[in-house]
Amino acid sequence: MNKPWFDSETDILLLDEYIAEMPSFKKILADGVVEEQEITEQVHKVISLMKRLEAMLSPEAKDVTTDIFCELAVLYAIERKYAEKLHSKI
Figure 1 (tube, rainbow, N blue to C red):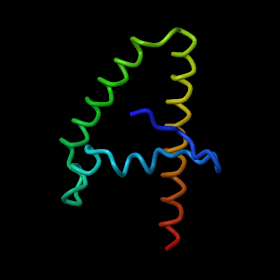
Figure 2 (cartoon, rainbow, N blue to C red):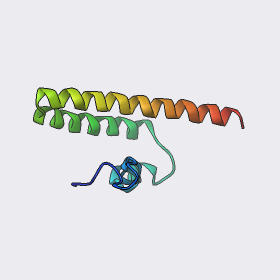
Figure 3 (cartoon, one colour):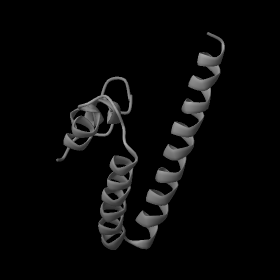
Figure 4 (cartoon, rainbow, N blue to C red):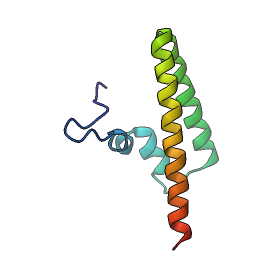
């Protein structure tokens, strides 16, 4: 899967589009309910992939990748907080 991370015209991150097509995402949401076991399985999948990636990276690439993961986590956390704020006004 050699897909671009960004739309070439808008620079918008394309992860949302890719996520919607991921077999794991489709499987978990097939019944419309997210179970604790599904989250645990996804955590293990992510950890496995991250360990594979970590073994392949140079120290400099690992530092940049760590920063990306952390900043992406910040982005999703603040988006979640913002969404909560919007829903509390309804």
